Structure formats: C-alpha cells, structure tokens
Image (tube, rainbow, N blue to C red; front, side, top):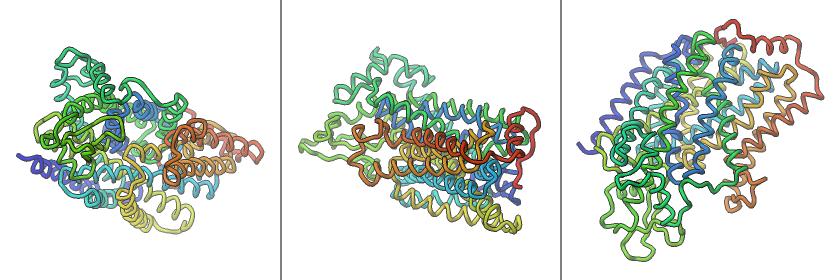
Length: 562
C-alpha cells in the first residue's frame, strides 16, 4: 500500500482507540477530572507519565536538533533526562504527601496567600501555553506531510482530537489515553531505529549501533565527522557553544522539568505516596528507552541525509525531498543554476534549507524503509504531541476552574459548576493552543526550551523552598516568582522577537542564550525570595509544622481538592 493509505489506516485506528478510551473513562466528578480519582496503578501511571513527559519535542525535535547540532544538541538530552530524576527524587513524593493536586493549590496553601496562589496560576498558564504551542506545531507538521494538508489544517485536526478526550475525560480519560499513546509512540520510535541500525551497522540495538562500524569499516561517528567537515560544518562530535551557556541551558532544562505543572500533577493520580515513588521509577525506565535511542537516530539520519542529497541533481532527487518540499519544511534554491542540490555550511552557497523538525519523521523515508514504517512514525509523532498537549490543557483548565474560580473568585460554586468551568476552560485553552501552534515562536524543541526556562525561573524555587525551608514566607515566594518570570520572559522576548539581530553571544548577558536564561532567572528568584523573607514576618507556626511533616516519611494521604 501507499504511504498515504498506511497513514490514514494507522492514524485512524489509533485515534479511534484514543476516543474510545476517553468515552469509556470519562470523568464524572472533579476528583476524576483533576486526578483520575487517585486510583491509577503505578505501572499505568508510569506509562502515562512517560507519554506526558515525552512530547513532540522529545519524539520529533530532540533527535533533529542533535542531528544538526551534534555535540551541542546534547544539552537537551542531558537536561530533560536529569530533570526527570530531579523531579522524582526532590519533588514528587513530597508534593504527593502534601495532598493538593495542582501546583497553584500547593503554593496557595503552603504560602497561606491568595495572592501567591494567583501568581502561581498566572505562571502555570503562561508556562503551559508556551509549552503547548510546540505540541500543536508538532501535530501540524505530521499532518502536513503524511496527510498532505497544510500545517494550519493539521493543527486544527489535532485541536479537534485533543478537545474531545481532554474536555470529556479530564485526567481520568487523559491518563488511560496516554497509556495507549506511550505504547504507540515507543513502538513507532524503536522500529525504524532498529531497522536502520541493522542496515547501517549490522547491529539491531541502536544504542550499540551508534558506536559501531558501518559497512565500509568506518566507525559511524568518524564517518559523520568526515562528512560534515567536508561540507564546511563543524565536527559533529565537537561543541561550539560557550561552556557557560551549555551549563545554563542544561540546568534550566533540568530544573524547569522539575517545575513543570503537568508532570507534577501525575503523581496525585496514584493511591499512596509509595505508589508515587514506584510510578516515578517505572516512568524513568520508559523514558530511558527513547532517550538513549535518540542520539543514534540523530546520527543515522544525518549520515543518510548527506548521502541522499549532497551534490545530487534535483531532477534525480529522492522522492522524500519533493514530498517534504510540499510542506515548506524543505526548500531548494538553485543559486548557481546547475540543477544540482548544493548542501554546504556556507549560507551564500547553500541551496537546501532543511527544517530540523522533520528529521525523525523523514528518517524512515530517507533510509528507504517500508511504507508501513513511515506511517507508524507519523502515528507515533501524533501520539507524542497529543499526549503532552492534553496534560498541559488540563493544567490550564484546572488552574482556571479550581485555583482561580473555586479557591479565589467564586468559592461558593458547586462541584458540578466547577467541573463545567473546568471543561469550558479546557475548550478555550484548546483554541488558544491551536492559534499558538499556527503562529509558533520557534521550532518545536526551541519553543519547549523556553517553557522549561520559564518554569525554572518561576515554579522550581518556590516549590523547593516550600518543601525544604520553614522560613520561606508568602512575601518572599511572591517576589521571587514575579521577578523570575518577568526577567526571564523579558530576556527571551527581547532577543527572540524584538531584536533577533542581537541574538548572539556578544550581546547575551554573561554569554547566556535565551534558551539558558531560565537558570539566571532561577538564581534571581532564590536570591530575592530569600532576601525578602529574611526581612519580613516568618510563616505561621502551623505552616512551619506542615513543612516539617511533609518531609517525614510516614502516612500517605489522599489527594484533596479542599
């Protein structure tokens, strides 16, 4: 069958499964809508967490970045992997024991302040919308190529699917849908990786193939270094970023991970604190399968790409080049009018513009794998993007219905009304997310990196200090969140949107790029929060006792909306 037929079949079947699960597991109460009733098993929650965690950035864009940036791209791999470990060890069990199922709820109660809760709501919405823009863009990219519609139409189709199971099922529907989505995305990621590793190195394990010899007896990375340097690019295995920037980006991604509200809330869906720890362990195993494979896929894709297009006549270009050209994600301009595709580092001489977000999706086609594998990757990419988008949209809707309305503006509303407002909030969030997907502020992983930076600068310090510092008070927390979010967002907006021509190491503060500035924002948050707390009144004795009790390893406590 043709790729189009296979794609319609696989995408159609997987979407039918997702919708069927959403109908079967639709939420009937706020507890089910917010935390799936707290009855999810650790294994299922581990899978759902992995799917929630591995977004379009992980599935589609991370290997693409590594493929083009080489060593420099490893910051995403290190930051996101290390960040999950940080989350599992430092935050998840303690927040689960606290018993509140949203981050603004924790902030509001821990810092005994409606103002602190409101600031946390703004941070949650700001971070989540920045993050979800990348997911919707990923959905559009997949649809644009494999269903031959434009990216905007693809985003709208993705909006419709997410709307159905996020608005109807809430966390209960999302959780069990994400279990199915994890199975789809990991199978879709590993099958082509195993195929290509076998074809290029004779080794069926991609992680080992990454360090193996190719058919001509050359080690894969040595061959790749030779290919890219011949074309004028920097060596694949050598970095070009300043060390301070590498450190800041990696740390921003790590602590931003630990502060992401859509991942934290997953640990409230299991019955006990012990189950939260077990599900965190399962999730780490499930995440590691993809993350340890990504560098191999990146290297395989770059070698095959160069072999496929370099110095080839456009008239004889592989079919995948012309297929992706239709989406606008590959562009060829015959600058010297010789009919050949010049792919070189020199911007004036280079004739091929290749969007890095296509590398994983185009990889099976570049490697000439069967059509069903190509379609499988499309289904996997959609699963990755939709699973994370749903989790983020739930954070936005619960921040509005529970934290803003129920806890702040309209405390007298009934549970039924709260559930209605949650669904209305999710519906509105889907529409805004779709708009951001159509008009994104960067490529998928870059947009997601901004979200992590914003989470690092706003949420991480206030959560860490809320758990481990009895002295941290509401004045310090509010000042830290406001300053961290404002400075980081302002820095990103200035260099990325207001003055992109100045976005160079020479103009960055201490050589730190916008992607890494979340680390600076985090440090400012800690400093200002500590300074303000030291000159203002200490928290009430009851709050200080609560902080001590959170860290005592006894009791479980059910997640509570109250």
